[in-house]
Image 1: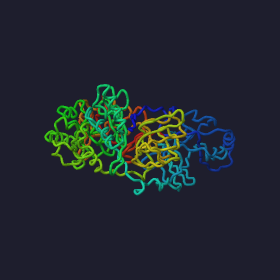
Image 2: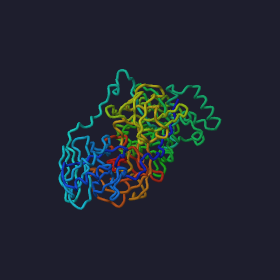
Image 3: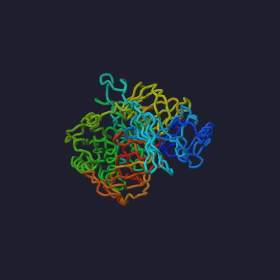
Image 4: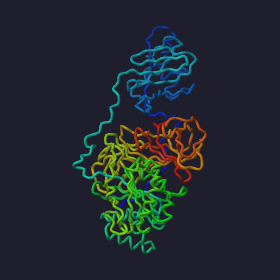
Length: 619
């Protein structure tokens, strides 16, 4: 039976520290202070200084004030006692706090060459070739000090550059284990995630339900039950749609509101069917569900007036859905021209729809060779799993729908990258004390007993069990739509819009992003300060445009104008946005699933794009 999933992201709890410190650093309880010294003997001033230092105090590196050991910051200038350090790791910056596994050296071991010498805090780095900077505002220049492999160089401005030249082995690169790579011989059919999208009332749920029934996924007994219930409410034609629209509200309103997930097997694939809502009020749910798609079926209504309404600028969802699924990276699409029985299987009407919609799809970036056109009738079972039997349909000599699905090409899977699984839905079990999450594994693999990291809460959990196609399994890999039962984590630490990842390779969490966007057909310009709704994988967050950096040439991608005042329709630009809450996000070049973005305002999609830079990360 189909599995109904309530897609969409809730607002997260504030997992950040409320201490008011900068989000660029990861503050811990432990710390370590290393103070440079030169051995000197003799003068009464030095002996008095050493006697003072034997009492538990620490000297501020900025103003040289003697602070009590219990103080975490300088009493005079407020500088933190815990030295901070930024470490470059590839394209990302990790902020570490110096640990305190070693106790602070007794101050009697410090040396001072004279009253003007100021002790300097030196951080011992764990990585080679790391440049560190500390800003010191003092009245004089700090002397050059060399001790071991650490160099401190002074500048005229008073800034102290700390360079660690210690030769330490770098972090090893990720290497997948043998079980993470699928065996083509033993694993059987490959999984294909297929999104069903289109304008409201085009027959998406009816088509999906009829297809599942014909392939044996819905028994005749259950189908008879749906038919009787639909007739009792005066909606006999909705019987097949009710196989996926299971909630009371969906059946009363006659529209799909959330994404329904169902499974069936074709000749080549194990297909995950994602039946998406078509009403404009539920486009956020459609976005959250269709981000998992490898390919899509765009259902259009061939009847007079209905097809034109789907392409209308105000409220037509056919064009918007095509733009959205293309922005998610879907480049293969099947156009199912439904309700051909209403137009008497007219070839002229089919050709009209094909020519009109073909122009729209080309403007969205679809190639003609990647688009399949299938005329059909879901209610009359024409051209679904076999060639049409109606004589009026004899003019069509192409594929039927199931054959067209088998002709789709499977996209490449990221088996060799660390685990990343965006969470689309959370099911909390109070009785068993565990949490189940649903989603598509974008990269890597997981198996029962594996330790995983749940972001953005940064909590470790254990995979207790896995379900794949509603069947219990031991291993799930990239491309699989899986249900993961987690153990050892509180339910309030897991939310839709989060990400399950490898403990050693956490995904970035940020609220300040640089985006490269394409503005769609909008009537109101995008200005600095415009309020938007940002959608990235299953996360949805309110945001504000803080900068419009440049306009780009749509053909070459080169900069044409800096700092424009506003953005108009069809313009390409680079902008900065600040989100209300931090989300799991990454640069598109690092991880495509975490870097695709769509911007919405006032119930419409106004721009599509990718994340080009994570400006401010939460550590």
